[in-house]
Image (cartoon, rainbow, N blue to C red):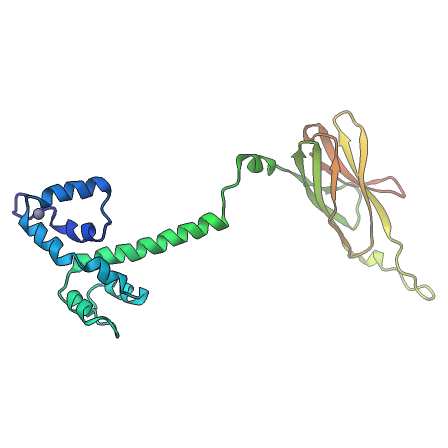
Length: 241
Ligand SMILES: [Zn+2]
């Protein structure tokens, strides 16, 4: 008993009957019940609630949890309606907590299934180095990419865009032949200055090349990555690693 005569366990009855007390609280409350007629009476009055709740549709359970709104749901069991009208607010709160708890639990399961935490190894593999290609000579090529360390070397992902310029559209001569595709190479330059050609492709105005190249050179040993025109050997774009 607290000082103002109110029984601090009096509000535990609904939670006890609905089975939402944790084990230690349940033992504590049962010990209290043995010496408190008031709480025993309250528990006895609520004893039928769990089986009553089992007959509820989700809509009825939610209506029950929505509080002082008359509690009148079409089709609600007369016996249940009577209980609700008795104004047992803490019962409604307990039911609302159960409904919300169930929703939260199912939500948590969904999240766990759709978004598993990545294993540490996977997180490490994502540590990529961004390649910011800058033009060495004026041209229509633009590129961006990244280097990703691998157990066997380095993976190079990049995208090379050839933007048409007015200079790329020569005046029609005779029948007008399509523009000759220019050939390009992706070259890795390592810390000792050794060049390794890792990919070749052709580009015409408007094309976008998105190949993936690999090299045995470790990421730590890559000094820069270059895009060169094969015909002239000139470096068009370069990116420091
Ligand atoms: Zn009591």
